[in-house]
Image (cartoon, rainbow, N blue to C red; front, side):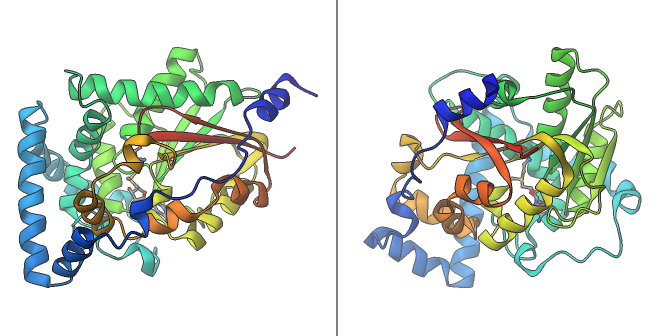
Length: 329
Ligand SMILES: C[S@@+](CC[C@H](N)C(=O)[O-])C[C@H]1O[C@@H](n2cnc3c(N)ncnc32)[C@H](O)[C@@H]1O
């Protein structure tokens, strides 16, 4: 038995964690906010106020939210035709309201604000610390890759970041591989949103990412057994369960035998997440349509079902966990 398998047995998950109470909660305050959110004009007003607060808070922490959106969108729009596959029809579950954007991940507003939102998210992970957004982002990604490291088995030639959005995690992955001395490994990003990919291309000024693929994670069209490491960073909570299962099957197809899959997302065991106040939890659920399905899926069991083994689950920060698995040889 390899040392890796032994490690896997020591840290293998035991039983699925029950979802946080608020996931299915009918808390009176949450219920009331939920009812208000059903009314279009009230929802628009509430989202507008929440949005103003988010932007004000981010800008007070050094994230140039509005100025950056303007720059990114202006530079990315001319690139759209080059990244977009015109024949790609996103599935129905994807064409819904996400993060309070009516057109979800497919609009320029979402693409132009994803980098800022990702930085604001990183700052929220360590609320008591006077970190810059850049330092928080670096710390968040380093903690993720530190969990992945012990599962790597063999050389990394091709690495794929699925659900790459505007490439914040993809470029962090490139930095990490360079730090490891894996200069020969190529890194590629894949996403269903063409505007996000156009912004990713703008952010990847020096062309450090080998390809930005416009494709669905469940039907990538990439060659079987051609990838050594796949990351899905903060993607699964945006997927209905049936889509997650289809994505895992596709990841198993793409990975070479012994290749590594790493999924990072909200940690159902996180005390911070479990203790979210009812109004915040209700607002969160209203902007994340599949959160309930994410928390009720037994991801380790789904990975085993999809043909993965050597599972490890570890928290990477106070809010998130990484699930790492290997494609069976
Ligand atoms: C929260 S963002 C991911 C952020 C990014 N990975 C990071 O670490 O900063 C989720 C991304 O997943 C993408 N996505 C959702 N469903 C997808 C699917 N079925 N196929 C490909 N991309 C998908 C969305 O377009 C969005 O860009």
